[in-house]
Figure 1 (cartoon, rainbow over the protein chains, first blue to last red):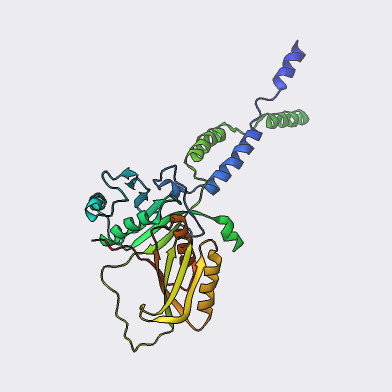
Figure 2: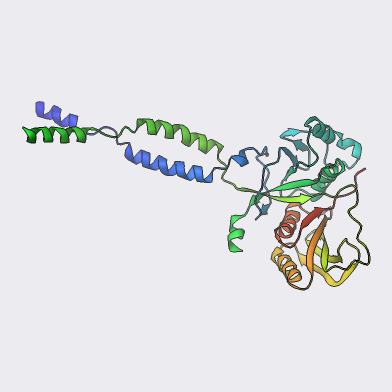
Length: 151
Length: 161
């Protein structure tokens, strides 16, 4: 009996070392691939971005998403504004949103659109931004690492 | 006696194990947090200038320069490129070309060839037709933006009242 008890005591507890090893590898991988900048972008999940080799220098505070149906300003749809409508009066919600956000004219504005969106909607949005005195826009893309390496 | 003490000490040191539980607690918190917030798609961006309401500086006609301004027009899948003297004054002969949007490397090579010659690239103005897809426009704009010789890429938009 005594011998059995001693044997039972000798058996090691739960082996945590392999689990710690595995978690360390996962943690390192996640830290290396973690980009907090990306989390700041308020993008709809269903849009497929066009590819480009250029990196995003900084994430602008003002983000505008353009699609065939509507325009979103910092994640919120601008009510009553249809991108297909080329009358200047119907673009007032965009001007109001820019005024409300007290955006400086030299601030860059991030434009997001699905790769299959007609460029005319993006062009119209950018045209209204230019008319409001803005001078710089960034087009959001997905960074194409493969092409970059090939070049 | 000393032999027994040594044996006891050795047994004690064998019993002592590194306490991994605080490490495990930390990992269990960090790994789900990073998994939830991580974005595995790396995002990029093409930065562009917008036309200003007032016109730029007036270039004197007598002022001769070897700098070239480009007008890049995208019509569906066709890229049309025209070279002008600085300030978009006069069109330069033999500096007009056409490319396909599916081969942007040909456009990149053309730009490199121009800047390697006796002319220097200055600025470019980009205009796309309504039939153009956003993806094709970004493809061309990326090539223009990537070219080191071009100081600026201006997006020419439709007139807005």
